[in-house]
Length: 459
Ligand code: SF4
Image 1: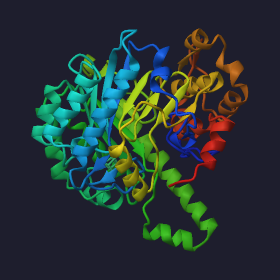
Image 2 (image 1 turned 135 degrees about the vertical axis):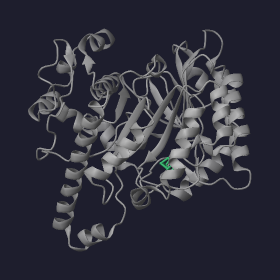
Image 3 (image 1 turned 180 degrees about the vertical axis):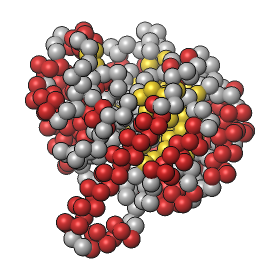
Image 4 (image 1 turned 90 degrees about the horizontal axis):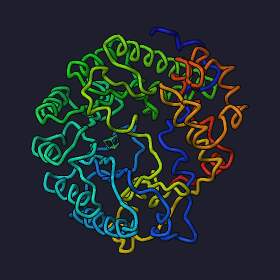
């Protein structure tokens, strides 16, 4: 499909990436510190997702705003795994045994889980299996890695313990682009890492790439796409760059005042929309199908790649997150440990986590009422290329999203973001709408969540 998405945008196309709703900046300390045992008592527990968060990386990538720190001095990883172990014991205890507890999917994310050594990864798998009771050999297990930490010994552990999907952040196969916006890495090292991953015979390989880097052109973008395609990855994620490095051009724009700044911003939006379109069309023409704005899946990929959730960043109810940056979801409460973006604060939160003895209560979070649950369902389904079957929504809430969100959906229709040709009973984005996912998602935030996010004091 080659429908144009580069018509002058009515709104800024890149507001924010909505990978979870509500965002953590809408969470607050929970004054009553509810006991996990009570929170989980009435929840269905026979198909939970398990997420283990490892907040360490070797370097900080230029665009990254995830909860992670560089390096781990003085046995910090050991202390972190000790705390994770204590937390797992407390959480499994809180889930109780009155009803069957079963995990249907697991993921190790970060940070960079493979920052841990092979022995530490064994221990991480033990925590998931022996403490939490997840059968890693029987369920989809997704693990994030990086070129320099995807070593043969670590991959052997992960493959042996049942990993079904490895996701590697490459970002660009062009060394200068990687250096400019991402991190210093050499293509030869990236290619060697991809070779080791394929040698480990983990069924699904996902490669993350980024577009919108300073100096990136359609030609260099296609160079990266083709270099990735040479590995026939089962999945590819194409991410727009969000944090613009302080390039000479950028400083010039800032110095020249708000007008020049706005022009520069518009040019960057235009570059990203154009590269998105080029990337999408390149992959669609090479046997990939689009799952969401970012995610593409090889149409003939083995069945294993389709057993997991549609989008690995998509969270469903019934999520147990362990580690200091992980979220957990019951139907009524989303909660986590503390949250920060500043490096010093992140360090102190990790130190606080490793010193914690009592993990039996939820500390920070946000209650999700019925209206928010509807928003969340609409938002997460609409951002998938397959769209939202109205019957699913009606089965869950007894209403029609067009009645619940008439103003929002009318606005989206006016902007050409809804697919007028979608089959009866399906609410689906148009190509233009999919390209504007990062504007559409935030437009569905409730006034309450928006206000909480705006009032959040970054630390
Ligand atoms: S490796 Fe991933 S988590 Fe770590 S700094 Fe880079 S983008 Fe962020």
